[in-house]
Length: 269
Ligand code: G3P
Image (tube, rainbow, N blue to C red; front, side, top):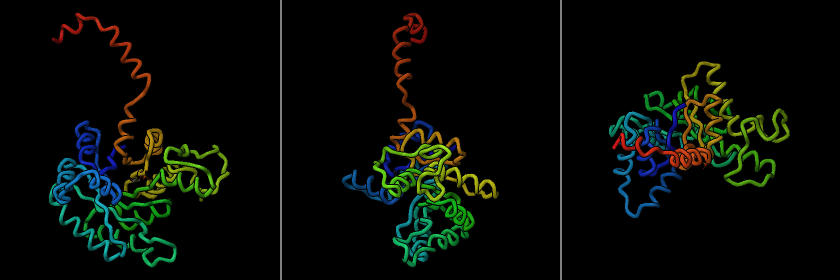
């Protein structure tokens, strides 16, 4: 499984690449705002250029902010033209459905934009996927990546069922009660179950589209995403750091350090 860093923070991205564990970067308008707010003065073009250069050879997703089909197509092309020459690694992120409510006319604008951009060989990362059906249609329209939002599906199931929750709560892959459908969950028992269903459907039917598990908030979700065959997981930097930690690792280090034979160390001095 490839590991992307879900961040627009240059320092975090740099660190992840220096560690040799990053296979790509995903950004979104909220992550971009967080990075911009953190810095007093920023030349956004140069800042994004730096991200692209650090990530050279691996995909960087830049999201559109328009919501009409034509708006997303035009903006997607402009973003690609402006930034892809820097390191040839730009993917344009398009919401599968950019409508703000059910009666909104922009329901189908996402799929139209995916088709139009893919057709001119601009790789698309289709975002805000909450059902396997959305993933299937985005793949058919030509998306290179589909991004199911695991954590937010857990939020959704919990809200639907009037459960108390915060961002640290999540459902294990099999859902709350193994083997039982006790929740109102539209047949998707957890965020990771959504990822698994997307993987199965796209593999069963031979799509080249890669499943990029997003909105992963803890290390167990990353493990489960890998187990169910996600092609990519995009992770906040804090989750990447947490993946390296274990109390028994600390304990083991303490004990090994206590036992060091001085002559052994001298051999390398
Ligand atoms: O990749 C999508 C991600 O940035 C959203 O994460 O935790 O806000 O649902 P979260």
